Image (cartoon, rainbow, N blue to C red; front, side, top):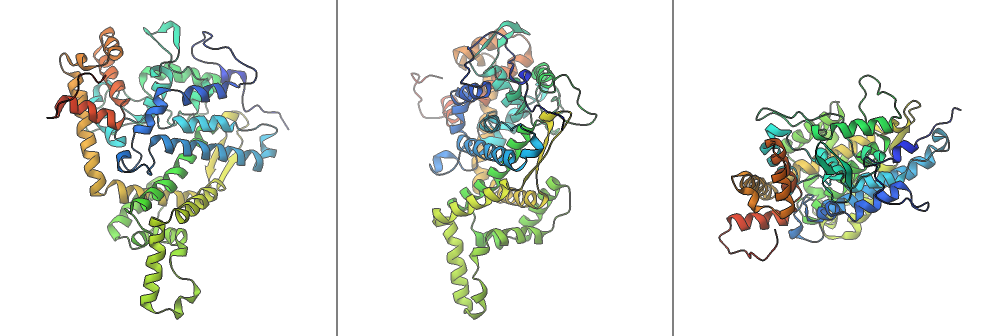
Length: 462
């Protein structure tokens, strides 16, 4: 067999060539990146950003930080399993599980306050200047905004090098291989990818990771670690958002199995779009019947009185909301099942672009759980009320900072950056970066200092 190398020295080079830290033999480049991320401000801020339910509602519910930790662990677990199951195909190589974990840790780091609603609000304000997109902001944070390393020679007048992570690490978070247009019409749909300001960096990443090779015609750039992270995100999303919804009492197995036609039709449409194949309402219900098979009495059901049958099924359903052991056992079982459904194929010419995917039946289950929870919870009136406030709040803050003399409301470092740039787009992006970096609570406090009737202390830092 022809020897292959899944990783090469070029993968571990960094955009800023200055020696920002001395390499230690006992510490790999990826472990250095892991450390930089764990200790970064943007990583910590994820604890203040909503996953599904706002953090102030309960300490139990997941936030962006705990979700990212779970994604990281699942991603590393996927890599560990593939290294064993596909040992022969890998030919002595191993997928770097720690690199997959690193990608999981930062995959949501670009999310603004109030999740997708904050994202839409910022995108609306940035339509003329490249829009706003969470994945693009993740790359921008890691390669520009986080305060760790500076370029010795500024690039386009900007000396910020972010965390100065390895090219292979940066590649692991590039989910969408496309430049976001700098200008879009109002009402046009956001294109996922990376900003024009990071295009030259992405070109460098591709050159290093592909070792000078060209991408085949029509193929997008997405490394094996990025694919693993993406699958891990879907698994965590599908299982743990459902678990949180059960704990919150927003959903029960009984309410899911008794779903109305309108919700089921919405889920069918969403799942079919993701899978690219027809899906029926019966498929949605069949999946949940299998997931919650223990809710209904077994073979002895025929000998049970209808009222007793109803009572037992109701009690079993309520256990998922009230019994942490039951929820944990179910969530753990689903995660293990989904991890075991990941398959691998080696790319001989570009090993970094080797393929991983979920088996069709497993992917279908994952998508059904994910899309059902999203549509049942995210579009509920109780959740929508909070989201609406977030959208309006982010918009209001952005407009206040964009107004004449609005820069006077900014922290000193943001104000200095704002005044240093001259182009309208660069000024707007500076404001956008600042607002996007806010936690939910910080954004609410900042807005309150602008608009609230209550007095806010001037001695609290901005």
